[in-house]
Length: 315
Image (cartoon, rainbow, N blue to C red; front, side):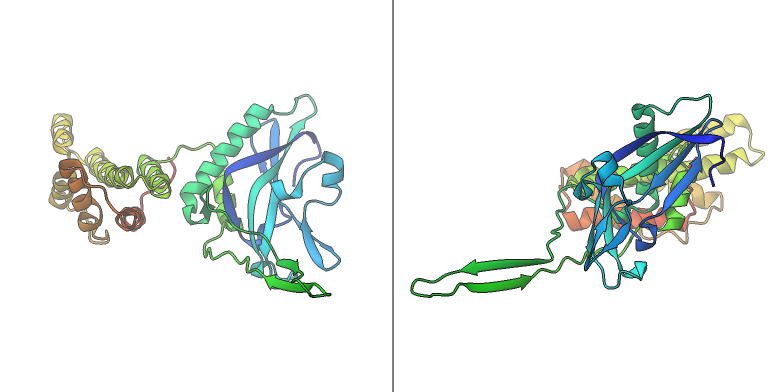
């Protein structure tokens, strides 16, 4: 709940570069967060209102009050039972952000709200990249198509009705728990391994397979180097020895060797040598262009490695 001393000062619609598949339970929710001493922000999701036979999106009265085009805010691709949110398949392209401030403070500027929103979306990219649609991944939103035609010599038109499937095949959706996690980490930096991993995800989507594999390799090497550095910081090793070891910590093979010599277990890590580094070496030394499948496999293997070794997402 937002304390009574905070008043609604400004309201913004924030457009997203990517489209996000969301859990139906998020539709219609308003999630407040205490952003700072003087501000609360509330993120409002499109809601489903029963309007005769078909549902439509938008907070009641919002479109009349603010002139919002519901198609630009978000759409329901399909639903099996409007009373059961878990059956609803929805994606959103815009959210409403309400800015509340205490009595003596003006509302946040559009620039500030856009910056905060980008930070949240970046956090969600790290938490649940599977929920993001790439911009050119068009999803039709047609429930049926009616065609009429009249053949020469016929008196009555021929009417054809074709139902079009609009069910999204995405399995992963942003949940309420993940959204709250993103909100809690708005002001925290993304760790370097996950930042490199997210760069790889974008490279894969753009079919820049070389960059995708190189970013995966960098993500793993940075992660291993950090594990070694943390081990040395927590040991009684002399500073000069630490500096010497870190100068040797260069390249995947040396990093793995150092981890083993220090007893740092890598048993849970998947086979990144084959999925990532053998492909990376072909890129660097032979100008090889990996296939989309190879790049995607490198990305998935790297992500699994970061989770297997409990690498934190945020600083």
